[in-house]
Length: 177
Image (cartoon, rainbow, N blue to C red; front, side, top):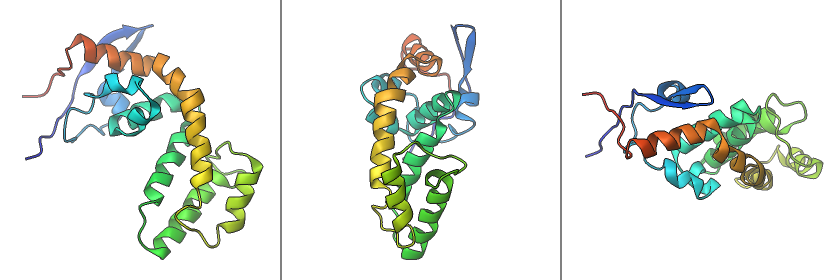
């Protein structure tokens, strides 16, 4: 039996005047997880993989990246992860074109910061995409997030507030009765 956790708490930890409202941070996306979604907050400090491997971690990291105007990085990385799961050619073509137009092409609405050689290679091959079409770009963005964004995330109000909340409550969040 799967237990769903519903979290409606206000994190009262004051961090430089910021009160972290978990509902607001996760924008209703905490409605149903198989376990307490913030149970792994402490492990997020171990590696960027721990953050990206956890749905709640992805949400928190995305919120942090949004505050730094670089949300496109995690959105692209997540889109690539979903893209690799595609089973049909028509779906692959459609998804590849969406990823390309949203993140890769010059002047894309959420253009990612990749070198021109990688961008040109994707552009050249977009008419016949494969499941590995975005691998090089995804690795570059992952490296950027791991090297640059992740260390700042660990120092951010978002992460520190969640960590303090988890530690001060002994990892027990208030759940509705």
